Image (cartoon, rainbow, N blue to C red; front, top):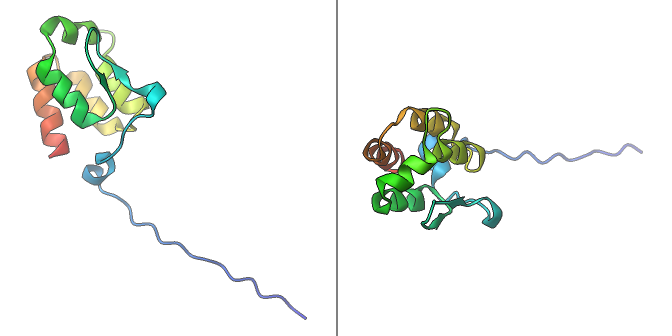
Length: 104
């Protein structure tokens, strides 16, 4: 007697880049701690923090060598394409505009 194995086929729709970031929050241990500021879990909260932070706070997380915001977006949120663009942003205002467009 032969046994017929049934296979389940699960179709997974690929999400667009805009869909991927919606609702993605970092786990508790991997949230972004703004220097002398809030702890953020996702891009929306990062955007709110950027609006409120001082230039001193922004400069603490950005330098010629590293952009902490971009590293976090890439490594924790998986937003590699956004992170590549974030690295190029040299001002807080430019970074705010980039994230606003990205999450719109």
